[in-house]
Image (cartoon, rainbow over all chains, first blue to last red; front, side, top):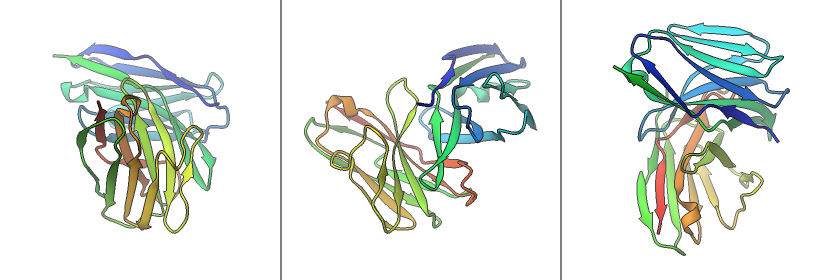
Length: 113
Length: 116
């Protein structure tokens, strides 16, 4: 079956850049996503990238996709304390008339003031 | 973005009992999804709830354990039946509002269940 792997923890200083990495196994993935979960809250979609793209930038967020290596990364520029959260990587594949997502276990980002 | 409300937000339950979680969306959607997030784990899709038809369950999840209702396009319920401590999890309702079927899911805040 599909598998999505990501490191569990990342700690950075405020103002530095954060890079969260993810690998996946499903070569037929259509979309890849980054979700953010703040303490006690549901998941919030940050951004997603179509599998035929290799980069997407949205303000402080940059997503890089290396389809050959099945590697996805999320770079957060000028990391702030409000960015402290768990970040989930997910990939989708079509099924049952819609896209079904497989999530990684999440990377807990801690931002040190 | 639309609002997804879940009730209860948290509950402590006794082994062997059942609990129904409600999910209310403030706009009509075709598909609603129920996920489980076990402690320290990723999200796992339980089932897809379609209005007017039976829910579609993922491998490892069965209707007898997780019955789902979808009476209209804005509401769904998930029941966790005959609970055991292994069912202690956060249960999340989600929808794809984009209409493009691209998996841009919006999530409720989740229902955190603790089974004693």
